[in-house]
Amino acid sequence: MPARSFDISHKTIFFVASFLALLWALYLIKDVIILLFIAIIFMSALSPIIDKLESWKIPKALAIAFTYVVVFSLLGFLVSIVITPLIEQTSNLVTNLPQTLNKLFPDGSPIDKSVIQRELGNISGNALGFSLAVFSNFLAFISVAVLTFYLLLQRERLDQLISQFFVGQEERVKKISRRIEDKLGAWLRGQLVLSFIIGSVVYIVLFFLNVPYAIPLAILAGIMEVIPVIGPIISAIPAVMIAYVSSPILALIVAGAFFVIQQLENHIIVPQVMKKAVGLNPLIVILAVSIGGKLLGVAGALLAVPVAVVVQIITEGVLKEE
Image (cartoon, rainbow, N blue to C red; front, side):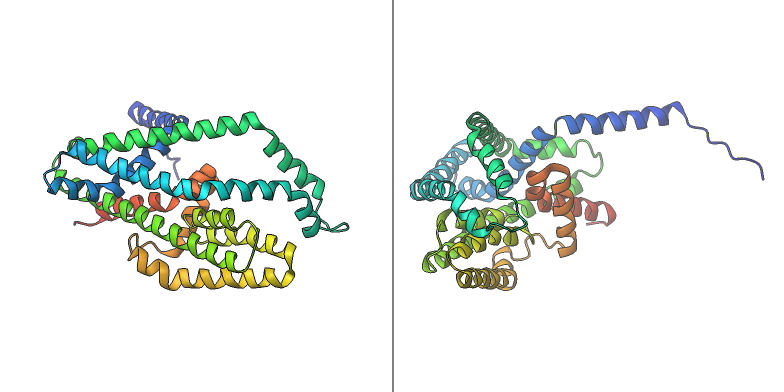
């Protein structure tokens, strides 16, 4: 049988090289892409509010500015309520950390407390690194706010710009774009409501059970709610461990309470709040979170579901006529 020969043209080599170069360039600017994607999510969530204000004959720029003032005012109000007790309880948690570790891991246990204390000491003692992290996150927050503002302002022009790359498919592309925007907005609004509900319920439960550090533990539960499947489990671990320091029985009660909260969340709260906003298969969600966390860490895990939503909508739009 004669040997087969493969003729690779210069165009093929150039295309592959260009594609790999594009992937490498995207990797180098991945932080910028993440910020832009977050801004798109916020734009999608705020768009219905802007559209409603515009229907009242309010100019778009003024409608966006008014929405920003309301949102930042609410955030400032919430922060002012929880910031003082949060700082106090978090400070007490750090101060009492050695005693807590001694109770959790007594002498003779397989866990080396000195390693844990040393690592936590390095984190809390690195004031410069902490300050830089706070400053970096603040800049990222400002960047997302500015990007979101301009995305809202130029929303229609962006649709026209994107559709120009798909000659003959302009309406279809616009329809897919709107579907993505609707889904991303619904996801973010649903997640904010879920985080608030879960955080509030966890705080009430821990407060009445007299578990120390209820506020930081409740805030952690609300934040981790954004990470599907594994987030609620992760947030329950420190609460159970801290309750165990007071009493093993209290730890069992806290664990049971978190289990009940998670069951109510899975079967009642999430279906009612999300209203099938994203409609992703649970297996796809787990895989997306795992892949996102592996590639980009915490940010990847947090953004895994909205990315999967975008991929699903684009795939459906390409594979079938809408």
